[in-house]
Image 1 (tube, rainbow, N blue to C red):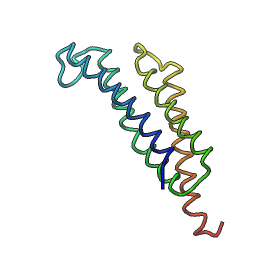
Image 2: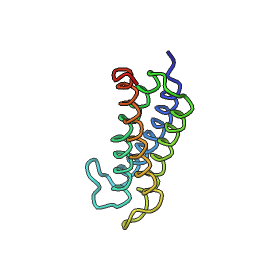
Image 3: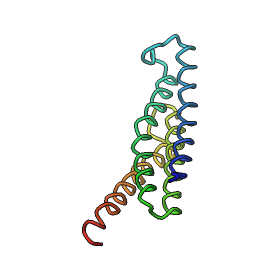
Image 4: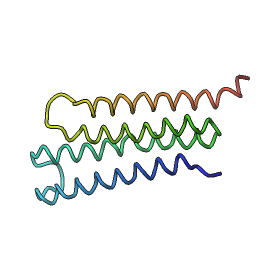
Length: 135
């Protein structure tokens, strides 16, 4: 079994995660800040952008892998996986905005992420329970 969608999604998100980690490390070195942000808003944003992706990435990849292994519609799953990657990128971009209310990238990124995760979770429940309930 080849989990093509999962592999591509995980790879894209890993590349994004590495980029965000490098940016965080760069700013930590610039400000000599091994822990915390030392009051620098750009470092706060970098830490949160990296941490936020690290928080949502595992559950997204897990749901995508379970659905793909279950043999669901390839095209629909690929679209949702691509949407998940785009939403995580938008959220990361949005976290680099100056302080204040969230901009459109961050808002679209998080709302899209949550809707896609909810959709994936419900789809997985239906996929698992469907045969059990005789549907």
